[in-house]
Image 1 (tube, one colour):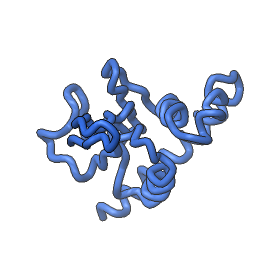
Image 2: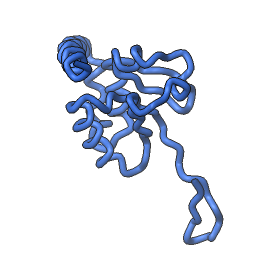
Image 3: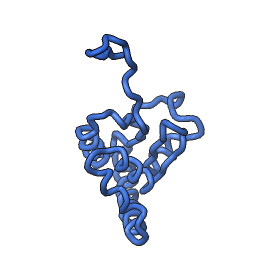
Length: 135
């Protein structure tokens, strides 16, 4: 996508997102959280990708749908590196206004482990909910 700089009249490329976030669009909690993050991401630092809307051919190389749905995944645009689980949340927080000030909590011993325990509990609920939706 190209945009025209109003002062110079020169065509410039839109800024590329810093990260790609792969989320479960069928999860009500995930949709609420992503909706909130989208509203505060005015700089376009994040590309939000609903895993359920991807075809098998559109899945990232080396990743399966089950793996992406099994744990939260974030891919860095700069180097293609992956952040998974609690580390994915930390990566998102580092690029979002307000939250970047608090991203350090994921590196504090004890707090990171508590976040991991909470996240694993959420995953159990999410798997149960996904199985219930699938019927």
